[in-house]
Length: 345
Ligand code: GLC
Image 1 (cartoon, protein in one colour):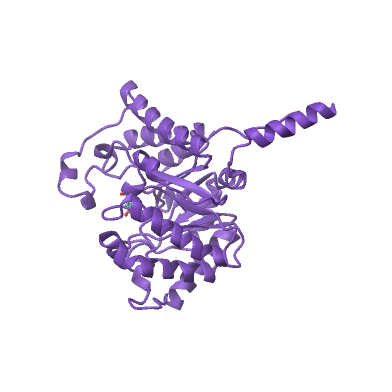
Image 2 (image 1 turned 30 degrees about the vertical axis):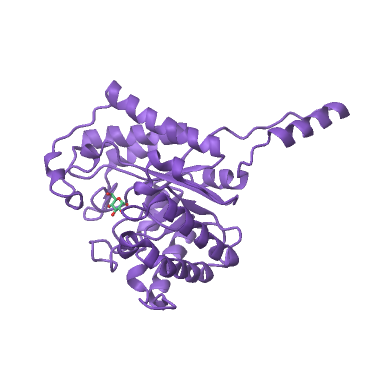
């Protein structure tokens, strides 16, 4: 992103006038408030495999109070909280969200806030919506209406991300329309809440050009980065049998590897500059089946790219299969944590 442009104070009246005129012409429609917020979002970590499971604990992670101070002490500024709202909401109108689930999310936000961590709260894994977006768009919007009204008084440490990795049958036209409709409803109760939005095809950099965003200054655009997938997702069961063949793939930071990564981030960075939108790398990580040396090198390189382009970022994820933290030994995996810290400088 282009750094904030600061004009020198002009003394002569004519110069002042000229400066104002130039500013009026040159000043991009850049969402400066969102740009500032994005700087504060800085670097975070995803509390993955907990609340985005059908029920918390189904995928082996139940969030613990001690996680929040640990994350803060390690230097992270925010947590991204993936949430499966659709498995806690009624199937028929008005699609009421279970009040006890709201209490659990309230607890997560309270723990985050009392430890000085911002929160990006999303909706994750609404599978029926991905299969048939139009049939589920009303439920989708009504769930967000409830979430927005529930958190209407929260300060701006909390931001919303309407949907993680829109994909499958959510094409760009449908996603643009559903996003705009949801934003309108959410803005009725949360006029200034920062909203994170990413393109289709799993928040792919290659699909940024298909995003058609409303004129709203409180938007932050997100992309995810797991490239090359044969390396980051080797042996990942949810990628299908194919991923077993990728086992043993290394990432060494060779010149072609670095140049591909640089080209990807340059593309995302240029899109952000052209469209005057702050950029958030909401997920990046390499699964535990890859060797640790490669994971560290890759993580460091991605993090450096994010910083170089002034993206905020969030590592995927805290304490599960990609985990920077080992919940059994109760220690950070130091080489990974170090990779996240070192390249942040
Ligand atoms: C996406 C998926 C999540 C997965 C991660 C890494 O966020 O929604 O379930 O673990 O990417 O593949």
